[in-house]
Length: 225
Image (tube, rainbow, N blue to C red; front, side, top):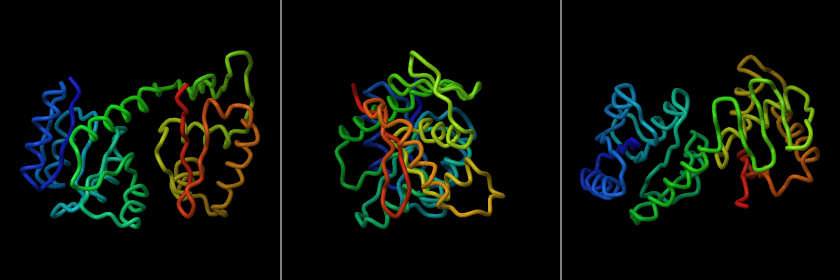
């Protein structure tokens, strides 16, 4: 059974989501605040986290960042705040999706299923982007007919984006994940490498597209075929 973590200090929302998601076949694990959510994460397997932003103690943004650093699971943030800056902060902290309250439980269900579809594109070593197959273990990329050769950092950058389709990465995230925390060069090197990847895969836009989110960073999307 798929386990959903619902962390929200509003007991009515927790009860609503538990009822609705249980009917849909999910197992809901509740947490009334961020600290309890951390304990639930450590106690057993969680497959997806639904987090309220405005929680006492550890808020949703901090909890989102903690999960992203320690677990490879989809995250949805819930908030009553609609400011663009709040959404930006959520995506920078690592959320996969963002919903404002009040919301329809059925729409949340749609988004949960969409995230599971995205994450199912990825295995431990093999990432499938329609015709493109990325083998992280062997550092190989194939289009089904031939091998595509990339310099190491371009390969690692593409693999990082492809491992989490739809997730927004800031330049700082990509520098840390691809070049390492000790890198002290210009963060615009990310832009240069993204430009080269787009040029190399200009004929594969039906398989995947790397989008620029102005002022924040990049995300890779896989078109539905």
